[in-house]
Image (cartoon, rainbow, N blue to C red):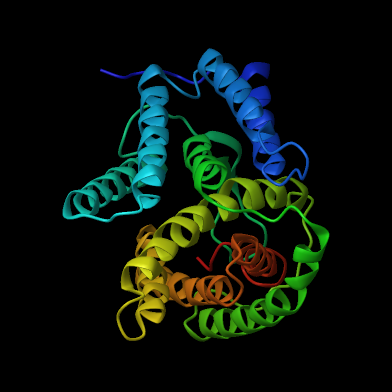
Length: 299
């Protein structure tokens, strides 16, 4: 029985900080392996503090093994029925582990709560600011082990136009839809909590979710469905629907809004082929929600 209580000491703070540094270091141009060193150090402190248990560590190692084996299978020069079956098993295994960790269905990880029951404005539902270590760790594994990332300035510059267009379009559609549904209302505000919310949302939410739904799910669906007519478009739609379903805890309205938002994130990923574009659009929309709409929703 895997029962443990997180020890919220300096060890847990160091574990979260090192995990954040590991995520940022994924994009270091001259030290591509840096993320792994910071990630390993973060895991050590997470184990010491109780954020991650032995079961959680075993799940992360199993997930890493799945990605490593999947990389080998996908690089095979002579596809066969056995390799196709192995690929399917590995993908399903990784999906089960990722979803299980992110939803706390699988044991081994504790969330770190920074603030609890905060109400940002009148009429807004209270929310808690938490960091999901396991979910972010899975995102690091996906990006570090199987995704080509941007490490040159001109590649970042090339994202400016598509990210701008998709961000404006996604924000406009989702904002209008959420207000029309009565889910939020126009609510411009400033709160000092944004300084803690923003890096946590970018690194522990946007990077992790886009790594899974775009770099892992949408990218693989696109490769599998590419021989079919409009297969790449179907991959985009399916990944967006799955992203919406993943937000089912917020009710049917949240599923719809997340699906529409997912179409924006997946659309810019389809357009650019860069996971960074999807992450940026996701973060810009979330930031607009925090700063200009009821957050997280109306009571």
